Image 1 (cartoon, rainbow, N blue to C red):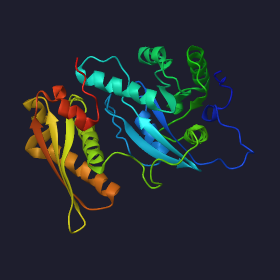
Image 2: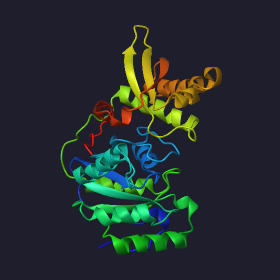
Image 3: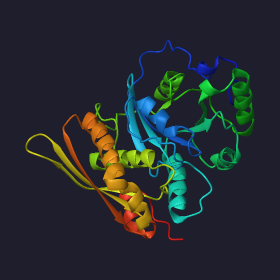
Image 4: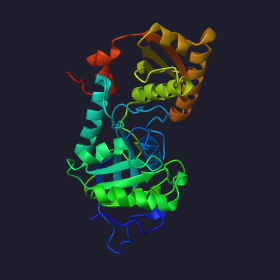
Length: 320
């Protein structure tokens, strides 16, 4: 039965302290699902304590499953950030939505994340219609509570729990971190007993060349958010550690039309230079080595219909 939201917003569903002996080692997968821009990637980064998933204002930024690994006590929790679930219109859309639901079905636990400011809109209600097909414990996370009044939050929690039998309800702000510790503690207690699945110091299963491409794609979208379709993609062609301790990275930004290529390059190459500087700065901080980043922009009009590109992104290519 779903909890009645009667605690303060930042502590709804907080597990009670246990007097039992220390738990055995635990490990398991938690899928974070929700509509686009619900804040899944921001929450994932907050739970892990490090950036493992890119964040932009552009909808459907996350395209494939991104796994972030967190340690809480003797529990290892692998959070799976899934693409936003929406009504697909194109082949890439269908691949992303299929991947998101696949991540939910494959996980041990599922968290449905809702933008509390938007409430139960059509996208959320469509997720509720299918969530019953997922045979795993499900919790509700209302995000962005710092933007909503308490009474509105409590009413929203009650309405959502009337529609879906959530195990618990949490209210958080992924941006400020409020309430996130309670979510982490609950998942740590609920993942199955068993050995850890990853080394203790590993925070993601994404190869560095893949994370490098994602970081450049983030800077690309942040720089040309309004002008560039989200179908644009970035691929790391070379990731090489040099003898002097630096790393050489060569990446290609693929767009559908020459007009988009000109936008990314900008007047006298100023836009691509700014993207490169921002990406190189973050990559240098991430890998703690000097980075030499080289970006190229190419037109590949049919890339979103190319099965190889889907494999590169970790997506299954839809045949229809």
